[in-house]
Length: 317
Length: 283
Image (cartoon, rainbow over all chains, first blue to last red; front, side, top):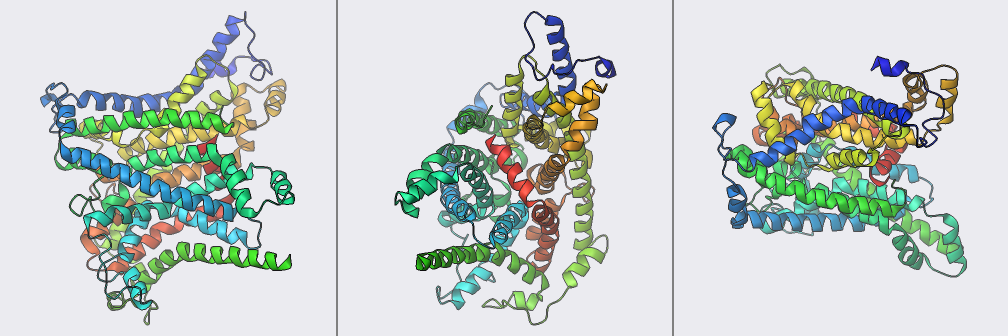
């Protein structure tokens, strides 16, 4: 690497396109780039792409222990087991419900919050600080805090609602399998709305102020300006947020582990938690790998959608 | 006209009040819980203002015996600090060089390689965790900080690379050109010109990666099971199973302790983190 460092290079080669017909320089640029990229490539191949490939391989093996020598090839049996298991499809369904519900809340509240944060009012710094504080709350602290607030016997939410006369006895908010998934999604949204609002706010700030002024002079009210100008102009950013949050929702694990451990009655077992149980509670590493690989494929597909959405924001490269 | 302005301000500050209540209500309750006696926490209906506030939980966390809950949390804080710092240093070095290549060197296959890195940024930990677990088991790296640093680099490296390459690309190239005319090598220009100018961005990026590592739970839960390597999130998750039925206040105090460092960083670097988040996702 030091050899490359000492090579004399003339100024401006990076800025100007490398002219054709100078293969020597181009090759040198290539070697230089490779040298700079080597540490990052080692990381990416060593601890991301190689394990990803191993996940695919494991999904075709009967890997039921940590002793790798004992694994045998079973073809697509793990995948066949999965697609014929109704519990797997219920998991997929719950993940879809969680994703749509939490992304929906985040987007609706996020757009309104971003619009609020974009107002020029005295004291705005306080509101923006509040938003960044929530962003910084560690996921586990968020889960522990809400688990305590929602506690069926001593929780503060029950206490508050009782004092306000809104309920007449304490409720078990995450007790029933039907309700728990939605409550967990709301708790997840509490922590994530700030990020969504920050992304949308950044998008709003790129909209020039004079088009609003022009519309206001033409008599368009605040609500109409929001509906017919802000929202359409934000569409690309909204698309990015939807894809990004969908990818994140498929990864959701921490909050479910803390609040419900997938219960009650598997009511909050989403795909990541299901794979965790199969692999690390039941030691079915092959089956877990099959779930993981299917999830990775799905997320890869979403990532391609994300890249297209990025290109449409106009700031992509 | 003035009446409409008044209406506008009333509406805005009403929304602001709801926002502050939604944000600080739960957090304030966490702090109050950490200061309330167990009897008050278990009273029905909830006792919102403690009559006998106590710092006993914080005393236990910071001065409790090595084998106590407090001692376990202290060990976890050291582990989290060491793991997050080492993760940021290792992935930071890899990302600085890589990002400089993307921002300043022209080479064939740049776009596919950049997309490869972005794709790995999206990869769910789930897709990697099983092979990583088996590899770590065979290398004897389970339940070690070293193992955690390695797996945490899987998400901090692509993140930093992406953020820094955007950041470097936005810096004016003229200064580096001038430096090279003055006889600095290109790598010399990176170290003496680019990195000093980029320092605010580097600090923000490093702190965001640090917080991501501080927050990481999934890998830490699976890869660690003793005080030698458990991180703060894992220690806090055990409060629920092991101790929370005994003392909700201790769980709350542990939460407050874990919450303070990231919140302080975020408030101080508020503006930079907001633009970093936006750049990380939308550029």
